[in-house]
Length: 97
Image (cartoon, rainbow, N blue to C red; front, side, top):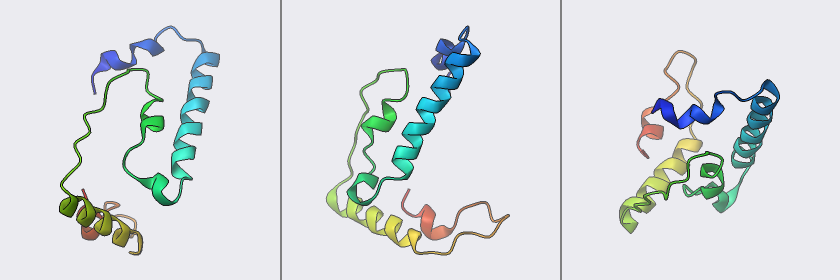
């Protein structure tokens, strides 16, 4: 990550920084608590929490690959969580990346 992206934080008061943390946490919680189709990969509201305004370069894969990755992701949710010390990942979960 480029350091200049966070230059807006320099010189802000502790109160301003705490408010920024609360704002970001609220956005993360909203995303975390979403369900159904709201879990899709396109999250402009979440991206909008960042101060830099860039147009996302959205490259959607072809239908076959797109659906294959969606199915792999959904299957990974049915797997037991990894044991502590296993790196927090498993092969099936990594397959949707």
